[in-house]
Amino acid sequence: MQLLIIEDDYELAETLRETTSSRFESTIAYDGEEGLFLAEQHIHDVILLDLMLPLLNGYEVLKALRDRNVHTPVLILTAKDGIDDKLRGFHVGADDYLVKPFYREELLVRLEAIVRRSVGMTSPETLTFRDLHLNLQTKVVQVNETILNLNGKQFDLLEYLLGNQGAILTKEQIFDRVWGFDSETSTTVVEVYVSHLRKNLKPFGYDRFIKTFRGLGYMWTNPGEAHV
Image 1 (cartoon, rainbow, N blue to C red):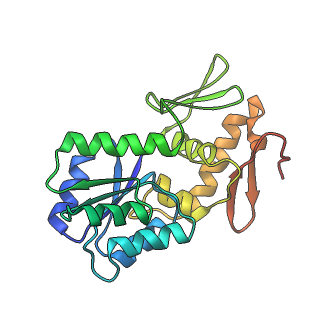
Image 2 (tube, rainbow, N blue to C red; image 1 turned 90 degrees about the horizontal axis):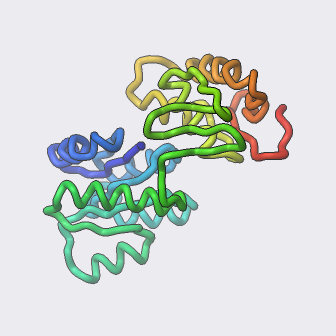
């Protein structure tokens, strides 16, 4: 899962990245403006947000996100422990609030809990579309009883498309989510992997659900929609 950490303390930000590394791949923003920009890309599963930030404070970042219909779950992690601070955080759209210092185990449990709530799942282990099943723990893809031979990035690409069916995902969004902001390759790799993924899905008829929007990106179509 993808975690966005918005924290201006460099040492703490790296500690948070390391603390959550067993569950999440993290991107770090060190001020409110950068955090808001990255959060608007819709590629993260959850956001860890400090309140006392330069340029834009955490409240301003969160309010701006909710005003712009960005509903990525947000856990506020701050030293501000007053009840008024907590109430204000929830009022502007926080999903949870944790005060520093914190226990590592509690942070992980809270992050995983709000991710589960945000996608409406009691178990995050399987993603299903008709007879296509993705086991998110084992990274195995099956159509009925047949296992598809997908490499890691193809699996990640299929998971991202399938998990956002009905939404157009730009090549830049896909690249940032699957390969990462700091990858040394370019966005042209997205077209290559989409082509390979289609070939692997074609024998089962599922390639037709990947719709191309030329010059923009791709969408996994909902049942009944025609492939163009």
